Amino acid sequence: MSDFRERETVLADAEAYGTPEPAVVPARAPAGDALSAGDPHEVEVLLRTLCDLAGPTGQEDEVTAWVAREWEGRGEVTRTPVGNLFLRFPGPGPRVLLAAHADELSLIVRSVTADGFLRVLPGERDLFSFPYFIGSRFRVLAGTGALPGVLAATTGHALTPEQRDRTRVSWDDLFVDVGMTADECAAAGIGVGTRMVWASPVERMGRLLVGKAMDDRLGVAVLVALSRRLAERAPACDVTLALTVQEEIGMVGASSLARDGRTFDVGFIIDNGLAGDIPTVSAEHVPVRLGGGPALVHRDSSVHYSRRLIGRMHDVAAREGIPVQDVVLYHYSSDGAHLVRQGMETLLVAPPIRYSHSPFEAVDPRDVESAVRLFEAYLCEVAEG
Image (cartoon, rainbow, N blue to C red; front, side, top):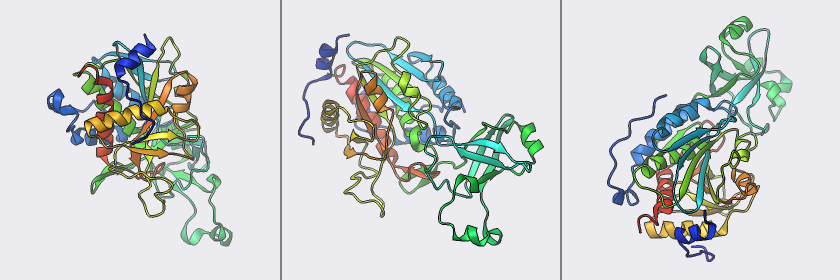
């Protein structure tokens, strides 16, 4: 436990601040059991469904449309021109925002060769987040519908001596093969600006789920599951859930969350955290393990997070028996800095993953369920006494 925990309640916060198709949801246990048990099957179904959607940066429509259908009828659903999606549960007390980003890592076509090969760049700003895994299958989001492609490079006997001696591959060495001519690519609606995402379905591996886009569909899953529970239990404050766009290219969507007349006092970002429980990472650097609960982030590369909120969440977790972890992150940023710039007291809550920014990101669904329970308890604790 942190020694800076503050013991005030959400009520004290209120006084201080003043004013594809959605999956069928199985019947839930009574509200009194929700915080002690939860439904890990619900989380797994959500992650499989959400990760299968294609939501490259700048083209998150498939994800936001699915969530909008899921949210319809639970509260006030709105969307901004840039694509951010909101669900509001009006209520008393502080105005609390919980946000996750809808986009995932992608490639974007910069040109098509005369022979129909696609020359590509990353869809996000990190041009050096390599390897992008030569041989990975991609889902090319062509105008006529998604088509398969493979990220390729010169291999085997065709390698020149110079290529064999090289220790680093650049994007000029890579291309995507869709098995089509240039004319066929044009007819299919593949051209400059066409995006593609990894074609790697979620699979169970022991107690873990492994696949693409866990960053940040696990955060989206938290918001969807939480919306189902808040529809049954009135929160003790004014709650807005939000999906942001274009996080991977520089937290662009989050920079406008508090515009258009929206104001918030407290902001939570739910994004994937880093797990240090693999042989090549020291626990001294990243003391976070899969299955240990969501991490409360004290600082990342862009911002220091609220010490008061960290203490409050530790109190809630201890009272409800929910596991949480603490971490300081570096070489990592989230939408959180933009919430602070917009005047919100902010905390990043990060269910951990292994192998971030890869097509085989691994999560323990129990950590995602713990994050849902943590937020449900925090938002409803006054209403529940």
